[in-house]
Image (cartoon, rainbow, N blue to C red; front, side):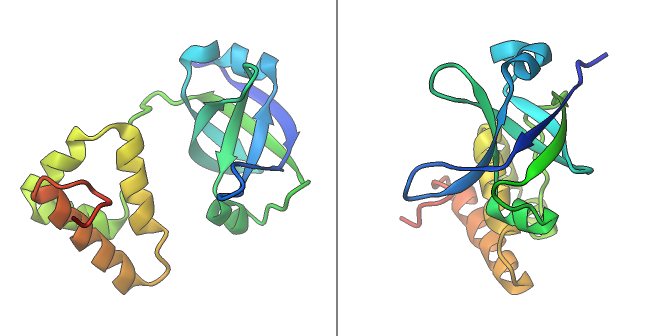
Length: 161
């Protein structure tokens, strides 16, 4: 059975000045109970909503969860708010939720799908998030096709040249 930890924490401001983000510091007892430094990805339930997140290192040896702005907005979370969390190690840490547009583009272009799968889990998540975070369906579709095209040609997923 997977270790499971529950705790409450405050949503804090964090990240570098050029990219302010929201984060939750995970208490030492909690991340150690999950498996310590070996655990890199977790399934987190935040106020009843489940999300796959990275358990990231803090300077000085602690761990934190980075919460994207879009996720905080969707859940109605504000800086300074107390959040009830449940965490357990992600049994499939390289799993990526693909937006429909990207799944279709990769299915239609086998070379792109092979190139996509050759990337690390972190890079695949970044590609999926790029498409999923676009607001309009036509923008998501355009991003998916552009991304698949670059991958199929052997290019970097985010560089146009």
